[in-house]
Amino acid sequence: MSRIPAVLLQQFVGMSDYERTLAIDRASRELGMTTSDILSQLEEFQNGQVKPSNIATPPISEPTRESKFSQAGDQKDGSPRFLENTHKYRFTYDPSQSGRRRQSEVDQAIVCPHCNAALGIPSIRPISVTCPACMMESTFEN
Image (cartoon, rainbow, N blue to C red; front, side, top):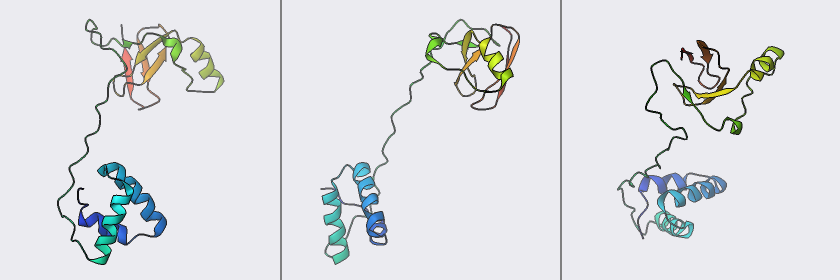
């Protein structure tokens, strides 16, 4: 059984019962230990029977993110990255009358070059698009 760092055990001691229960549950997931193991080490720490290790736990690596969008190699500068299967996306940003009219003209889907959000656009070129996710403006000429 691995030892819990002293700093973490000291934090558990200073918490109320409810906060301690939540923190122990979170620590059990992070450390890969059962809550009963953590509780037994906490009891030992409070009774002064065992001094905990001061060795920091190794950081847990996060899984890598995979892009949902494919990268086309034959695109020119200034041209948008198009999405396929646009029927999967709902492009409703602006509930006003003018917004609904513009949304009815949407027949293509592209990827925002700044944040990779899916954007619905008409086939008019050149077009200036402001992404509702990151508020960055991009102009596409092709």
